[in-house]
Length: 603
Image 1 (cartoon, rainbow, N blue to C red):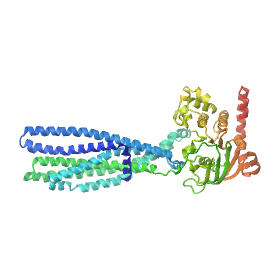
Image 2 (cartoon, rainbow, N blue to C red):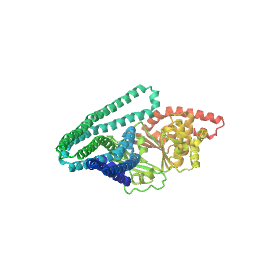
Image 3 (tube, one colour):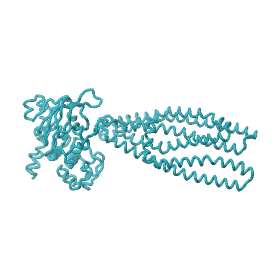
């Protein structure tokens, strides 16, 4: 019950509504308990004494009680539902906020489908408990205790006989909860796995179709669906066996009342009105028992969901502002690594080992190395996507761990090969880093990024709505939108992977022009993929197996570093020279048609 207890704390902002629902519940319970006593008086006093006025008065009283019960049943239902929706609102916001603040190391291992299930289905299960299950639980307990007290007050011998089966009934209920709670947790986990498969296939539908992989993916989904189906059947079997058993045991109490109570009525120790009222209360006692049986399943589901929600809310945030962190003032762009080592969570060896270098403001740094050498790790440590395991990363002399994450990242622009655009307008995507930017600023950034022409050619221009992940735009167009987004932010430090291997020569030329404008006057870190970047870089970092094996300029490294020369000639020289020739040919063709003469040099 601990996860549910924590979940109930989200009702705190809505305590007045919750109190209103609880008071309404008390009134509903009291009105239900008083009705059988009025019926008893009608039978014993009204009918027995043939007192029409008394019968009329008591009947009117029953009507008033029914109206009061109906009115407060409405307020109870409305306020409890309102409070539960508010608690779900608070919990969803807390969960989303935590997911936004969790470090990259958490998202490296988390499955999107599982996170989606926890943010939607699990929270809804908890909401149903706070809005319906909790009220049902309290109502059942109040009704059971109140009815039991009245039964003992009316006829303690008959009450003890009727209540004798209750301990066994509650034992069955507790056993049922113990059976289904683990099953419900498995249901939520399997549902998350199913959602993961669905999310992966929807986001990668083009790849699935391109490889004619639909039958295999269908089998994978069917297998996960079969597992989910099997667990749900196990839970249904537990329901089918235990709940009828609860009802049967509760029904034994009715048999005892009519047999033992009937004998007392015959013997004259109990009148008919008391017997009818007693049996009515016993029937009312069955409803709480049935309610507890039903709510126990809801409690099990909500408990499993709450446990999974708090697994996220309790997850540690590895990269966070330490106590006393200060805002990073406007920077010039000086970056230094001082004996930095880094290891990813769960890894047994360092990805970077004892890396040291310094970059002055406005310089361009090209990072080279084979796959797995640690290139991406270096650019991820600068904006603190991860924290160094050892050593210090400095920006303008400030240890990045001593400044607030927001003030650091707001002065760093990032343009990667895989561009992420969000559903919305092109203007919104360009202004993502500066939502308050004017349209004039957005247009200026788009023009500098060579995106102005294709945007203006669209029917709605900057108000054109792009699809999910930028569907509807080419790869080159999306990358130029990302460059415009970085230009609008006007960062002093720029991080980019400028690989353009997936676009044609003309698009590559336009992107390179935009990148050249973006890099002007900024400290730029580039995962090198083309010859022009390598040759023009002020500093080249050569990585191999996580170690910085060489650093310097292109000419110096060709002479002094055998590792650099081998990487340069084997990985870049032949392929990049051919692509460069293609780009020059396209550029020369555009110059011949009247393009500015300077364009050929940029190509």
